[in-house]
Length: 300
Image (cartoon, rainbow, N blue to C red):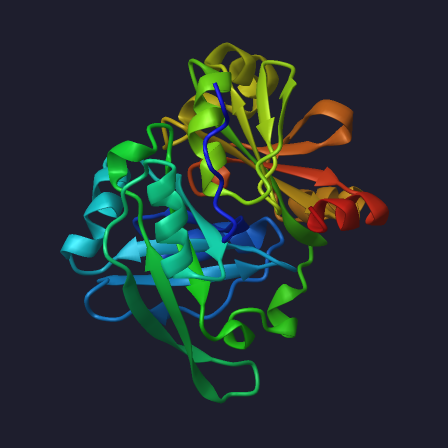
């Protein structure tokens, strides 16, 4: 059976959405982990949401809360009822229209594109705008965690140099660990979303390259065996269980966590794991990456 068509406009994981009840509390929790958190932004009225971001070299984390129920944020409200945490991933696209054509060829139906913006107060005090256009596959197309496509119309107001420096030395999202009863089958469902959809089997599951962060589809037993000490059972999402962050200096990450009295456990090969209780509903795993390895990953 031939592989499903891929999406040449799916350029990798763009950002991860952490759904939270309180933005103030979530921002404080992330700052205690050593992240620089941007000022709060309020999205266009039809979205009914507000956010903070944590910006890295080519991707970012988004803390998002619902202010006013709207049809557009129904999926966020549904997911939040399960618990706070990372429930959604956005994929970078250079063409919303091209993405819709490619997904249709793979049998994935999409909703109409949505444009929106939010004001941004820059570090120099000026107020600018961050503008986006997104397109969403229908919800039942992606059974192990929702993803949508994001085109940045104003990247300069998202990737601001001062916001990309973090006390914990974080540089990028390295991977997302996703629970699946059938990892190989699930990876095949998500593979057509990306231009660079190489996959290989790993212990307990399948790793899918996206062009930026990897997606690791793993069985529940494998996730519990690896992350049980980090209280992975408390993750809010039934699917997105662990967010792995690549850092320059794991010793400095450790120092920040200790200084801020954040409990953590030791993981594989010297990684540090923070439980969902202290990381906005998802296990946060910090791993040290050598420069050449990170550049190889960023290059696809």
